Amino acid sequence: MKKTVLTIVALLCTALTVSAQSDEPGKELRMNTGFWSTSFYVGEEKVTSKEFTNIVKQKENAYQVFKSGKNLNTTGVVLGAVGGFCFGYDLVSRIGGGKGNTGMLIGGGVVAVGGIVCDLLGEAKMKKAINLFNGENTACSLHLEASSSGMGLCLNF
Image 1 (cartoon, rainbow, N blue to C red):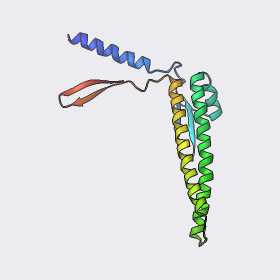
Image 2 (image 1 turned 120 degrees about the vertical axis):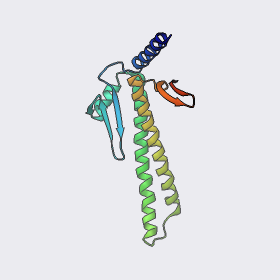
Image 3 (image 1 turned 90 degrees about the vertical axis):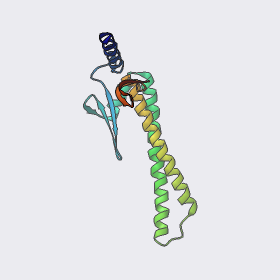
């Protein structure tokens, strides 16, 4: 009985490991985002944005999502910069003793917040495209979990 259970668990672990691997070993794509920049990696090698995009083009569905995310991200950065400038300019004007323009202050703030939202949505789409390229099934995981009745193998999907 114990051998049967162990065999089934071993086969299940192997199946999950194999299904989560990339189609092309060594070409696992990653994207690290920071406050000022985004870094792209193929395996452990850092590549430029253009090189990364050319690699993603190998899978059409991933490329379409990546391109859409990149455009949304760029739009967000531009809107955030313009809105932030308008908001900041009016705010500094008021601090300096000027009358200011309430429409510019509110409009700049709204555009800046909209830009931040677009930026974050674009980043999420680019990460989704990378997961599509890598062939990851992020909805399925296998791990050990403790509960009130003891220790057990937990499969989430």
